[in-house]
Length: 139
Image (cartoon, rainbow, N blue to C red; front, top):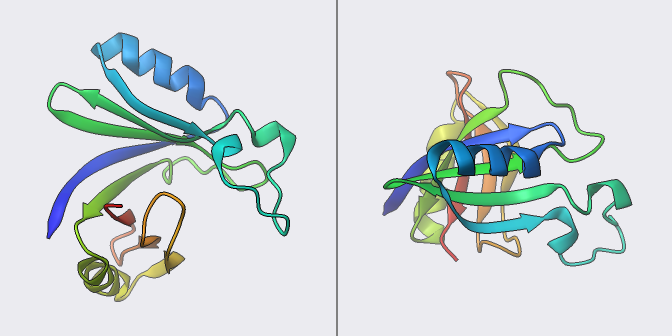
């Protein structure tokens, strides 16, 4: 079952500043903030020093709504128009796979569904209408 959808803002290296800005502007509660430095070490793909304090994922609560923020990883393109995506949280891996398969029809997979340290199944896909979706199974 789909648990919920929420806007996801991707910033260009100023995610920490954006979190504080929206926290102040909306009296938002910061429920969680992880940096790229919080990711488990991967010797094959070490996190560059300049990325350690960048926002991997921030979860804010604004009233009854959820809002997410992350920084673009250094070296990856930050393109205006792609900086606002929609995240969808799903209750099971099987349902995530079903939703992901439907969204990718006529679209483009950015990141195939895969296990991450924050989700048993996470992936990114641009649908045939140009909307970028972040599909995540609740962990």
